[in-house]
Amino acid sequence: MELSLMRFIPTGAAFSILYQTSFFMQSTEGGYDAARERARVAADSAMTWYMWDVMRAGDQYVPDLQFSAEGSYAVFRETVARWKETGFSPFERKRHPV
Image 1 (tube, rainbow, N blue to C red):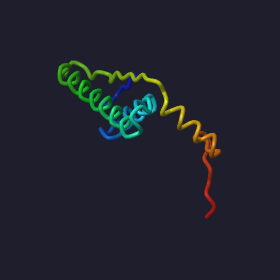
Image 2: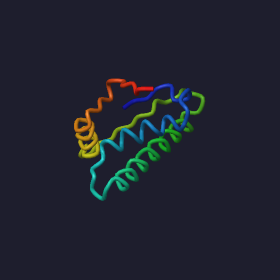
Image 3: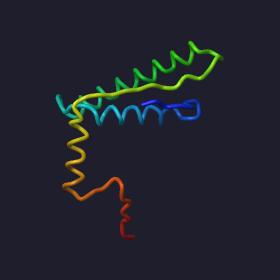
Image 4: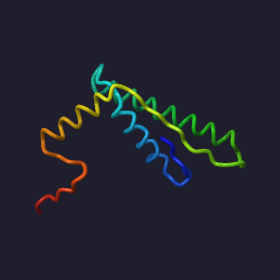
């Protein structure tokens, strides 16, 4: 994943997309709390490295944030299985009755 123009994105939003991407790639070994912690560490690390790149670049240019995540995709597979089981689709906006 390559994110450009990061200076216009709030820090929390940038962290959130990195965290969520990493979380879905995690295994479920050790449970979801362990998967969340691994995802948090990966997102924190990416943000730290990016800030280091920005400081090194100085006024020359604004670097892109480069991020990759890999894993067993177990969290993603289980999430999709739950969606199928409950009939939920992230691509359809369902309205709740008022």
